[in-house]
Image 1 (tube, rainbow, N blue to C red):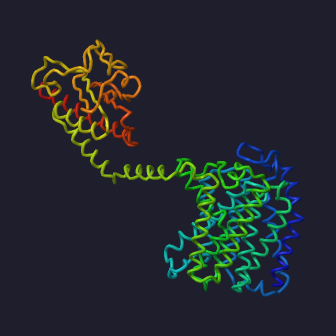
Image 2 (tube, one colour; image 1 turned 90 degrees about the horizontal axis):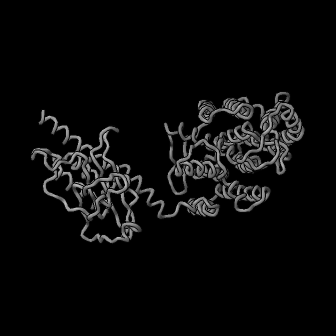
Image 3 (tube, rainbow, N blue to C red; image 1 turned 60 degrees about the vertical axis):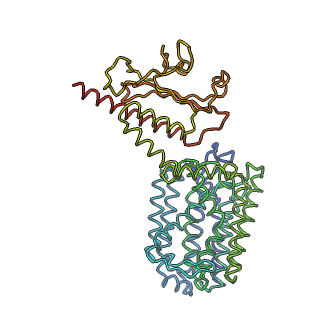
Length: 528
């Protein structure tokens, strides 16, 4: 315990002294964060606070070199700490590079993966997981993706919540203290000492980073803290508790993890780029709800402390209680996400429609498969009569009330073997010189060659101007050949369109064009 207090105090003092020096140097070098629309500060602030934490953390362990203590012996014996320190330095350098030069998100992710692999190859691995009431699961070859995913999630989670003064640093120190207590209880002295050094460095830095901040953590600091929290939580897992092995660090780091996962889900759902920054993180939503900068940070501190308390309770909780507690945490998380306004658009009806869209795109729905059959029949039509019958079937299936087909090469005097010839005269929809349904684009002096109307469809003058939806689809191929126009009409007073109708109409149009093209090619072959 003496070593823990000594390392904590030393790193705290170093951070208190060196942070102002780093801030002044950053200002002289122009390493400041300029206010933008996405930022919440109003004046330039030094953004390389990670340098102060990095120096304070490592310098606190220098005295161990000169004193033969148990901690030094443990450091010498624990080779994994060397790989951990190397990986942490890699992400720190990555963040510092991004703070000064700005680099592409894809490159940042690639370097983060390399840093995670360094830890994995050094023996920092998630080898097993457990959940309340479930058997202990040995991961085997899945250890690699689980470990990489965990390190990437926590590293980027701390980075994503670094949007308000003192938020990322405060959340990190509370998570550190929870993990420190867990390590002390499980007698993992070395990991506890390392966490103590990290806690002291963060606390000293937080003196200058809390609202109103005089220095920002920056990517160098957030990546460094996130990486160390992820790897140290693996080393400090309470192995005697199957359920706690995975859940304790997950719950303790719940805030950054939820923000990271939900950011990815949110951007995927709304079709946004995964790496593009926005103003919809948890702290941004609190500001939109009217919270002040400081109140939002303090509220998130309280949530982190509460999550830490729950994770500590999980150590000695029986499986039944742990499972119940986990369900409560999940329910509260969902309610919190909804309270923040994230789910306003994602109503039950919209989610069902979204699932229906996915099912339709994959061809799983019966309606999609049935229409696929209609497409095939339409495309394989041998003559106009057969084609028209398939068009009528498709129009009925799609819910249209009327259909008409105007053929540009229609010729009443053509030979009977002409597959494009329409047998028999068709009645027009009315007696206008320019047919009503063709008046907008076709401007024909004759009615359509083929027309059909649902018996229940009532043709009223008001229907045409107020309630009728009319689609006029040119039957173009290769942009230089026009077979004619397909017209589809629907009385919207009866019902609205299915969300898949317009997409199916496009597929129907392509099938009709394919059929007409085959007929014309056949006609030309017979003529020659």
